[in-house]
Figure 1 (cartoon, rainbow, N blue to C red):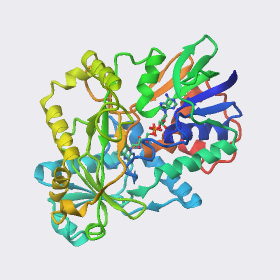
Figure 2: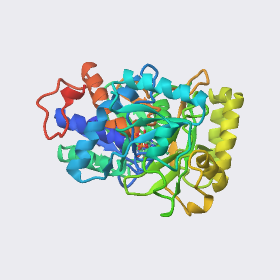
Figure 3: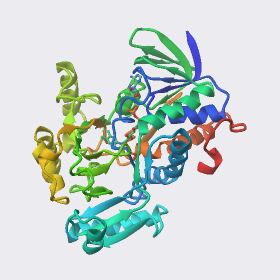
Length: 429
Ligand SMILES: Cc1cc2nc3c(=O)[nH]c(=O)nc-3n(C[C@H](O)[C@H](O)[C@H](O)COP(=O)(O)OP(=O)(O)OC[C@H]3O[C@@H](n4cnc5c(N)ncnc54)[C@H](O)[C@@H]3O)c2cc1C
């Protein structure tokens, strides 16, 4: 049976980035375990591709996400440039449709400043200034962030994987973790085909399955999760350039971790609208609403017995979910949401669907959505759950924070000279 020092479960942007740092800093036997044929097949490819800059993130409630997004911007830019991966810095305008929403933009200006953004990065514009910039946009006011843009996170995940591999990390593809057995010195990881390996330490970065895996280690047992599919529609060439920047709107329900559909200028030149947030039964239900009956029954049992049932008593949550559901069934319902700020668009301008992706927010024992990523330590394991947006943007810096923590806890030895890296670890941490 193969033995490792560190086994990382999940070959998404987070697991591969953590493996990358360990491979540049330490001489250890490390593997990344991924159930698919390649890395980055789930959220890390199936996302909006927006490079965020933390003007809208509360620096207290989302401290790690804000810091990571701020620091990662230049890191991804350097890698994209070196590997010839699309990188477009076209900016984002977050718009307010009325005075009330404008107050949220003023709050975002304060968040942005406390997250380190300068007046060159963000500014508040009134409707006349915005009309000059984007004549087809209709709104009350907007917050313009010059640093936001878009890229292809799937390609960045692959690029980071290649460097990690060169530095000696084993990538075990088509290895589906089914079970774990914790011993005093090492953990046995058992795969779907009954093969297994052992590792002295396990890092769980399994995205939409990470809470289930943490529970297999006996952790976070009173937490639950929900899966929401984000769907997109692709704009045809007659309207794709009506507006040149990304457009986000102030969310209607700020207590929930969903944004209303946006107008996205993708790095491949395409314009898309989305994502909505349609409840589905698993982190991989990309089509229809259910995977199979047993998955549905298990999710319903989870909801009825877990913390999620408290959310179902919240009328705002039920109203949000029914609107989101409508926008999945009816393209017109989705386009109507965009017509509020780009009146010229019509349903027939969106002839095909884009690639959908699934977000898995975690619900606390009190029935609240958890606002940050959640880290939890086991005896010989470390778990990251609720790693949602802007997780792709923040992955290079956040993964360095994780590695630093593991060094401080003595899980990883003190680092030697950093090798074969395009980013400087000490500068980031
Ligand atoms: C619709 C949508 C839009 C988004 N838009 C943006 C955006 O514009 N900008 C941004 O910064 N972020 C965005 N995000 C968030 C971002 O994509 C995620 O935070 C990030 O990709 C999460 O990476 P991850 O590595 O944790 O998860 P994943 O990419 O999901 O990786 C987890 C991996 O674990 C593997 N795995 C799971 N279970 C097992 C198992 N049992 N055995 C072996 N392997 C397993 C999976 O196959 C998967 O490859 C968006 C997300 C979604 C869904």
